[in-house]
Image (cartoon, rainbow, N blue to C red; front, side, top):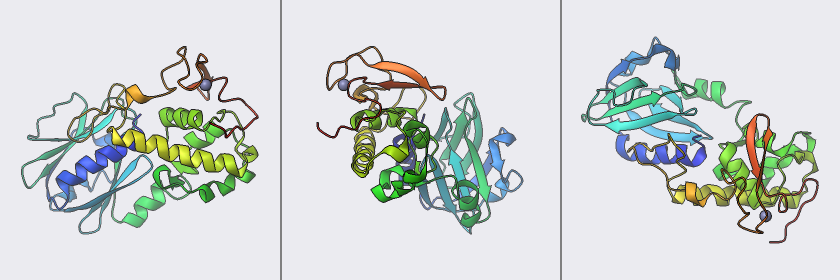
Amino acid sequence: MPELPEVEEVRRTLIAAVRDEIIDGVTVLRPDYVRHGRKTIRNLKGSGIIDITRLGKRLFWQLTPSACMVTHLGMTGRITLRPDDKPAEPHTHLVLGLKTGKFLHFSDARRFGGVWLYAAESQALQAHVTGRLGADALNLAVTDLDGWKQKRVPLKAELLSQKTVAGLGNIYVDEALWMARLHPLRRVDQLPHAARALLTHCIHEVLHASLAMGGTTLRDYRDANANAGRFAQSLNVYGRAGQPCRRCGTTLRKFLIAQRTTVICPKCQRAGRHRTEK
Ligand SMILES: [Zn+2]
């Protein structure tokens, strides 16, 4: 948390508010939250914000003259617009003042997130994307999963790794696997093409449904205007262990995969068998 829909919602609310803004002041409250470019971040004074793009759970801020700032919200990160520079959250690590009088506050209680500043976008991509992030889950094509034929990795671990599909975390992996009726421990090399196609479709479905409701807020997540998402009540499996499957009524079960709580329907998601019928 937050995952792709929440980061995308932050991006949308941010860019609507700060595109073409000029950074007028940089206040670093916690230097080690700036993971790269700690010495140069104050030079951002005078830079313009051209665009904010997203890949997976990372945002890439295109700044003039040529800088690129990468932000990751980790578990508890927030980027919010406020009318003044006084830290409103107890764990505010960075405040960027904007020429029109607004302030961008970067807060993160648990500090699994961060801010990285690079002199050029190519450096940002080299550090954050190359060899680390696969296709963005929102733009995933079934051909992006072709490499799975050679990978002997369980489905859930592979999706959480970000290496083929970027942007999904524990919530949306469990939701997409339930929708596609796939057991999280199935090996990716054993999925037939039809299962990969169905999974691609279900990932899109789950993400678009969440985006339409502003994402999922369990506790910490807020968009740039400090609004919570409303998708939590629409979750089918995540957080619903012990409750009936919304499709077949079987009691949902939870177990651990790689230290992550995983919730499945034991009837809909059988190991070693793929079912496409609805
Ligand atoms: Zn079921």
